[in-house]
Length: 180
Image (tube, rainbow, N blue to C red; front, side, top):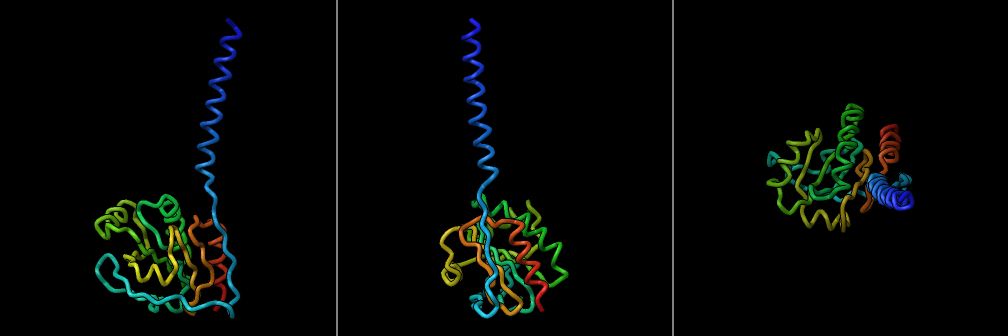
C-alpha cells in the first residue's frame, strides 16, 4: 500500500512540475532588443496621416523635435497588450523631456474595438487607427512592431514582430533624449 501511495504522490508531483514549468514559460515570453542605428545611417521614418479617436488627422511630422515611440499593435495581440503599460509609464516619465508614445491600432474592427479597450485601460498617449498603406510603408507583417524615431524624424531602432525588452527600449529612449 505504501508503494502505491508513493507512486500516486510522485505522479501528482510530476504533473504539478509540468504545470508550473508551463506557467513560467508563458510568463517568461522572449523579448527583443534593438541597437540604436548610428545617426548617419538612419533613414527617414515614413510619413503618415492617420485619424485619432476624436477624428482629428495626425501626421508624423507634427512630432518632429521629439523622440517618438511608434507602436503598431492590436487588441487581440497578447504581446501588444503587455507592452502598453510600459509605454504608458514611459510617456508619464519622459513626456516632459520631449518624448511621445504614439500607438497605431491595426484592429480590423476599428474604433468600435479600440475605444472600449482604451477606456478600460486608461492609456495616456495618443492612439491612431492604422491602415494598409501605412503598414506597408513600415513593413508591418506581424505584431507587435515598435519603432523609435529620433528628434529629426529618422528611425533609430526597430523592434520587429517581437515583444520589446522593457529595459532595452527604455535605455534607447534615454539615449535618444540625451541627444539634442
